[in-house]
Amino acid sequence: MNINRREFLGRSLALGAAAALPLGTGCSANTPIRRATDVIELGPQKLKVSRMAVGTGTYGAGHSSNQIRGLGVDGVADMLKSAYDKGIFFWDTADAYGTHDAVKVALKTVPRDKVVIVTKTDAWTADKTKADIDRFLKELGTDYIDILLLHTRMSPTWDQEDKASMDVMAEAKQKKILRSVGISCHSVETMKVAAKNPWLDVCMVRLNPAGERMDDYPETVLPIVKQIKANGKGTIGIKVLGEGSLTDGKQHDEALRYALVKDALNCFSIGCENFNEVADNVARVEKLAVPA
Image (cartoon, rainbow, N blue to C red):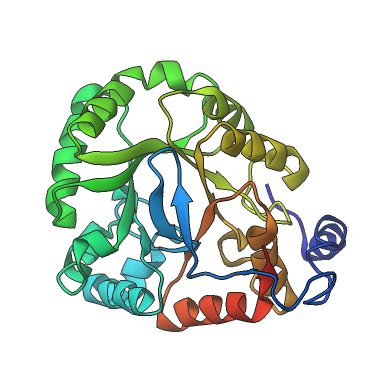
């Protein structure tokens, strides 16, 4: 789903009017602010994550992404380490992105227990899920995965279709190989089921003020995300910058502000393609100083 830039400006003014008020409006000097480096408790396991995660899968598919294509394994690892040095210790990867090896390299310079890693599997069967978990552990260079998600789920009956994979992941969680489990949602109906599913700990959802690269308009998606969180599940916003389409001028700050002020989101992931983008997004959030 895409909206042209003129429509974006009109919609973002309407949807984000409260968020766009000048800083300090209605707030005392002591009002807490929201930063990229805030430590957030995510999901029923209360995993401690940075509010912003650094994503590694811009246009990611087929074990590749803009990050890998542009920086290579060592370059992505250095970017992750740079993010860690700036207080971003939540790293977002997936089998489809081809960035597991980069995480492994980065973990040679960062203590494993000081970062939270979310990765994703495209598996549709129990055997494939088991094999993926074993492979991911080796590729990532770790003996546990903080969050494993079933990737890009779109079916309204995903909870039935994925039952075998879900059972495998639940068993791995009992063995402490996985800390939390969930899905990345790519349809409204998928999100509605996720909100009610007791197996699910964490839900990754596409959300921004313009509807760019989303499943529906924000006013349709946001109430469902609120319900997911109200039911005790962790919510991670993705496509908060519309996969790069909302990074021109004021659009960038407006989209970031939207992600920051929406209490439906525990945190959000931004696909950064280089060191400068990591630093720029952290600095932009700092300047926004959004009241909590």
